[in-house]
Each structure stands twice: as structure tokens, then as C-alpha cells.
Length: 88
Image 1 (cartoon, one colour):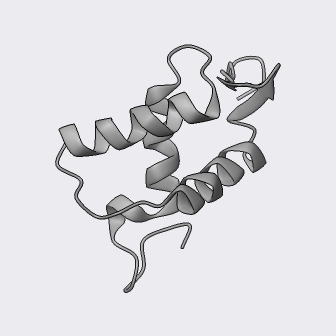
Image 2 (cartoon, rainbow, N blue to C red):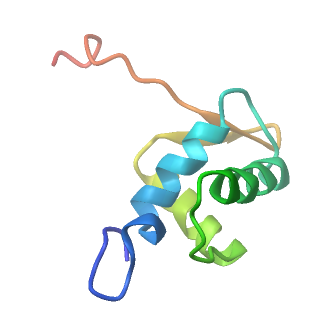
């Protein structure tokens, strides 16, 4: 589910959908704006496998768990992490 499996296509895996969501967060956006942009992006890029709103929310949960996004004042914000600051 998080990664592709026999039953989950690579473009529907939660990590892939999460990456696609991050592409939409070039600036802070509401959840509904991010959802609309993701659907349009997937159509424009030939991803025809359906992604429901529930699957979108699960992908957001994964991103939040990884520390990649946060919700500030009711808008989604992509967090950037400086690897040098982490000592890597």
C-alpha cells in the first residue's frame, strides 16, 4: 500500500501519490486546492488509475508522518529539510 505491490500499481502507491502531492505544494495550498491540482496533474501526465479522496488523505498522512508536510492555518505547507543541518 505504501510502496507498490502486486495489487497496487506504482503510480497508486502512497509514496508515489505523496510525491505527486508534494509537486502541487510549490506554495501553501488548502487541502481542496491540493486535491484539485493533483487530479489535474494526474490527468495531464497520463496517470489514469483512479485515486480517491480517501487515498489522497492517506498519502497526506504518510507525508505528515515523514515530516514532509504540515498544516499551518488551514493550509498545507511542504517542509524543506536541509541535509547539512541534520549532519549528513
